[in-house]
Length: 124
Image 1 (tube, rainbow, N blue to C red):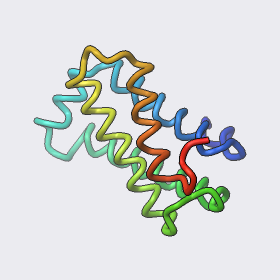
Image 2: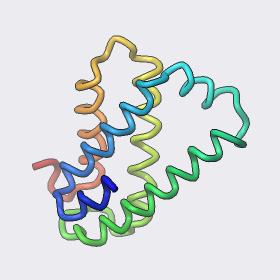
Image 3: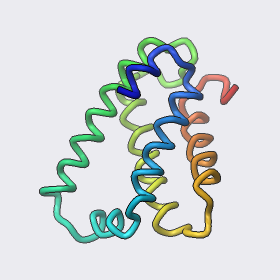
């Protein structure tokens, strides 16, 4: 898996990879992303999506344990939950509402926000 290959990589690289995959996922069908958020109850596809997010949170928490010296938040599991959901929500908002923004600009912005929350000394 992508997360397996990134286990030894620095947080900057892992965060950007995760942000990139989420941006690309939402860019594939921004209209669907909007409909999922606004209209479909938490069953079926939305429930599956939330389960996928849960599993990403789990992977990220494990990754954080191995990179704890650089992390600012003490509670790794909470930090993973906050970071993944922050990236998910921000990605959704930028892709569905800031349609003039380039893919690269969105990735840069969200990665920057996440790393400022996560890292003790900010992005390298």
